[in-house]
Each structure stands twice: as C-alpha cells, then as structure tokens.
Length: 149
View 1: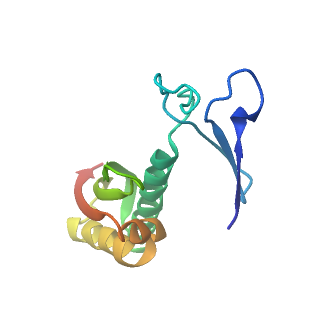
View 2: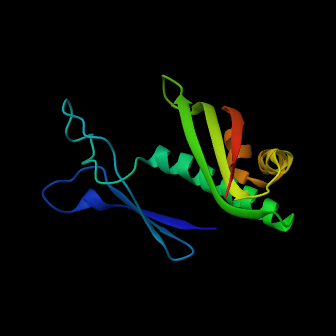
C-alpha cells in the first residue's frame, strides 16, 4: 500500500495547511487544518476534513466493511449499515485517540441481533486493521441496533 501526500499551500497567496493525498489505488483525498486566528500561518482554511478525522472515518469504513461482509457471508439479508463514531483525544501532543465509541445501525430483513454482535466482535478482534491498531492507544467500545427493513 502506498500514498503520496502533497502540501497544497506551497504555491499561491494563501499558503494555508491543506494537503492532497493520492492513494495507490488512484484516488484523491483532501485534508485541511482548522483556521487559527492567533497564528494564521499555522492554520488551515477549513476546506476539507482534518487529518485525524480521516483516520476516524477510515476506521469506521474498515469496520463497517467487515460487518457487512461477515453478515452477507452468513447469508443474512443486510440492506444497510451505518456506524457513528465519537472519539476522545489526549490533551497533549501527540494527541492520540484515547477513547472511541462506535454505534452500528444494521438494517435488514430478519437479521438476528446475535449475528450482528458476532460480526462486530470479529471485525474488532480479527479483521479491522484500523480498529486493532487504534485499540493500542484508545479504548474502543461498540453498541448496535438492528432495524427491520
């Protein structure tokens, strides 16, 4: 896996703290910092997600992918899956995630709650590289609900 991250503020009148990531799979992701009125040269222009937000979003995508795949392989009629993530960060640098709460909503026809619980557990214990990695610094908790389609 590879990725090239380039500072987009290297040219132009407003230098800012924007970055463009070009992934090995050929996709582009933009990132930017929050504006800093006290030190404008250190702040971003609020034009894209923060880098740590993309880490959190990637973790949500990784685990949701696993949960849907596990349920589909179990021949469950899954029709939707969302995961809401909330994270806490350390107050001092490096401001790692210290706590992450994930709430899954799985929509489907006759999907048993125990299958969803098992899929989430398998994702977090075995398959989701991102949550296993973040679990080294953050306490990750999960909850879920099943909605009948």
